[in-house]
Structure formats: structure tokens, C-alpha cells
Amino acid sequence: MSGGAFDYNQYRINDIADSIEERLAKVGKTRKEIAKMNAEKRGYESQELDIFDDPEYMKWKAKYDAEIEYDYSAELVEELKRAVVALRRAYVYAQRVDWFFSGDDGEKEFFSRLDEELKEVGGERKNSQASTIRRLKAKNLQRQNVLQNIRRNLGEPQNIEKWFGKDIDKAISEKP
Image 1 (cartoon, rainbow, N blue to C red):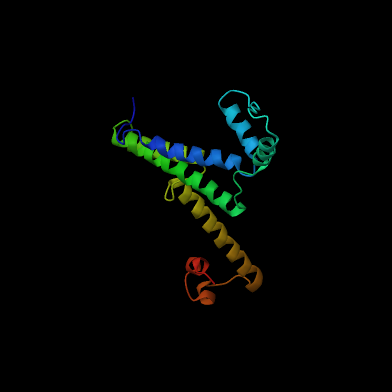
Image 2: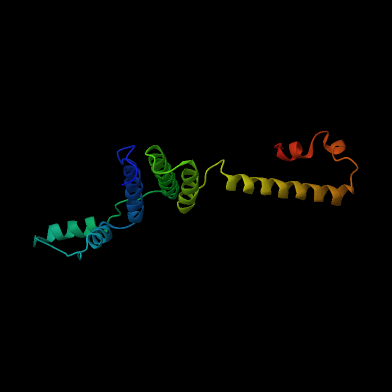
């Protein structure tokens, strides 16, 4: 059995993310549609049980069943989706630290599994080797584009610093 440094409580983080996803699946659906989804999730068919043969009750029930249960704005839905991603990332971190603290993983396995599992949930470590390489490639491409524009507009410079008055990389990274 692996882990245990946190009494396996990291699974609660995943449970919260699951609960948010379940709620998001119900956004914009009627109570009747939600009842059917819940029944199917539990493995049985939704049945219409009308125990009252009262026309007023039937009228109320039809109106009630047709109402939208969770009417969230698009902005809220997007923020809840970001929350799910953040919670999934938090779970991955908690799980990996748990295994490291418990002695199940060494430092090398910690980073390897962390990077692999973060990719699965749509993220990466900010200072990971892969993200550093991507950032450097993007910066190099940006630098090449600036140099191409300078050459195209001003010809081949003897000293780029004479136009910028500073190092080209500093000029690129500064915000206008």
C-alpha cells in the first residue's frame, strides 16, 4: 500500500472536483432531466410515480419538473471549470507529495510522475524543464521576429544596441 502521509485525505480534493463536475453537467437542465440523470447514474430507470390523482398536484408537479434547477451564467460556469482544473492539480500535488513523504517515491520519481500526471489534468509545473524549454523557444522566436523586422525596415545594423540603447533581450521583454 502506497502513501498515507496525509491519511489518504487527498482523495477528498478529487471528490470536490467530481461534485463540481456533476453540478456543471446539470446546468441548464430541467428538474425532470436531472432526476433522469440521477436515476441512470444509480443504475435504474427513472419512473414517473404519481401517487396523487389530484389535478392541482399534477399541474404543480408539471410546472416544478419543467423548471431549470441550476441556471448559472456563462461566466460562473467557466470559473467553476477553472476551479475543477485547479482542484485536479491540487490533488496531483497532494498525491505526489504523499508518496514522496511516505518513501514510496524518490526525488526523481516525484518530479517524473508529477509532470506526467499534471499533463493528464491540463497543467504543468511553472518551473519544470519542459515549460522552461517552451518559454525559451517562444522568447527566441520573438527575438528572431524583432530582428527580422529591424532588418526589413532598417537594413542590417552594425550594432543593434545603438537603436535600442540597451540589450535586445531587455528591449523585447519590456512592455510598451
